[in-house]
Amino acid sequence: MKRLLFIFSIFCLPIAKGNSQETLTLERCLQWGIENNLSLQNRRNEIRKSQYGISENRAKLLPQINGFANFNDNPRPPVSVTDGSSYGVPYNVTHTLQYSANAGVQLQMPLYNQTVYTAVSIAKTMDEISRLSYGKAREDLIMQICKIYYLGQTTTEQISLIKANIARLEELRDITQAFYDNDMALDVDVKRVNINLENLQVQYDNAQAMLIQQLNMLKYILDYPEEKEIALVPANTETISQDSFNGLSEDLYELRMLQSQERLAEQQKKIINHGYIPSLSLSGSWMYSAYTDKGYHWFHSGPSNHWYDALSLGLSLRVPIFDGLDKRYKKRKALLDIENIKLTQEDTRKNLQTQYLNATSDLLNNQRNFKKQRDNYLLAEDVYEVTSDRYREGIASMTEVLQDEMRMSEAQNNYISAHYNYRITRLTLMKLSGQLDSLVKVKKHKSHIVKSGSNRYEQDNWDSSGKSPKTKKSETLANCRQPVGYCRHGLGGHRSHFPLHRIQTHGNQQRRTNRTIYIPRKPTRIGIYQKNLFHRTPRRTQRRYAIGFGRP
Image (cartoon, rainbow, N blue to C red):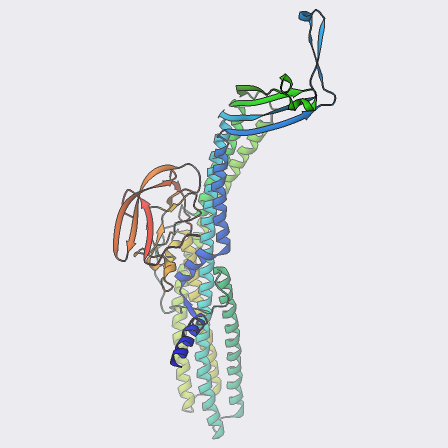
């Protein structure tokens, strides 16, 4: 019997655990959202598509070899008329045979085509734009998660304050009811307390419903399982952090994307100019042909069904002379596009600078407002306590107690709202100053490698022990790594041998070995990092790759 109870408890334990509520930190929410958000996964697929676009354009520089075979039946074969003086007649009329067949291979290869070279550069720029778009989407996701998390914390704090106020009013109601039973208070005083108590209960129910909606929205953004119950870490509303911001960052994704778009417009203008440059290509063919006048002759030996081979090689030079002024007007349009992008850059920079100045002013104002509202809240609470004590002693009236209680509730809401406004303004300043990634709390290292041709991304958030954050649910991003803006990627494209060091972690011991891995030749400045979509490593043994010079 004991054995059966033990087995039953083992099977029931995971069920009970699955229904338990999980408290999520902000760092955990950011980690989960970056890894699982559906929109962000779509952006990662766009990066892979852009990498394939580079390879697609590079393939145009490779030889194109095609095989062919055909059979022709001409019921009325064409004739050819040639000079017949050698045959003693003015003209020689030759009738072609009715049936013909040929088979072979054809070769076509560009030797020099500047348009194709520029197309490869355009594909690289498009790849960079897609990576910057991913970084911008990742940044927007962080902002969205933080805002909804802060809002949920504010609602939770309001619920706690409302519960405390309900407890105070219930105590006051009991005292008032005791006074009324002893003819020391009026019936209207009891009704007044009950009315205020019911209003607080309605506020509590509304806040609870609002919190449920906010948590549901958070789970949707994170792509968190709907059946799991979550809770948020209570906010520290006692103090605010004193941050220093060094002005508008020049490395914002909005500015970098416009720079890439300007470079793309310049390359598109170049490809128009390259339309005036001659192109050279190599062509060749090797084929076998046969001709006959009767279908059944294919099955007899003789000249009528003999296969004759032919080999040809040649160079093709294309020199553009006049295109009807088509390129001229396309070039003018491209120049206007470049000018518009420059104007957009200037406007965006001024807009971001204005946002930074306004946010700085709002932050200082919110700091002052928070301190004042906190003092008002503490003062209103003290006044209410004094008035309540006086009411218990029979000195103060019920009207005074309820008025002070209403002032205290208003001061509480103003205090909580001031704290929320400060956090939102601080979040905006962190984004504009390029400090938003500090919320993720990961360490930076020098390289981020994506293995080519394996459909696997190297995880960018390793902790100091070499473990992936997924290996332990209680771990957050506080101990994880984050790559910096210079990365090396290899999702298809040009490869070169590059010496790397592999670090394999077993507990607290590390072993360094040399290994050669295919990675791109040139580093690309980007600000985005991809998760490991398809690779899962054991808990105790993790692998990390870093560039061979310098320690990872």
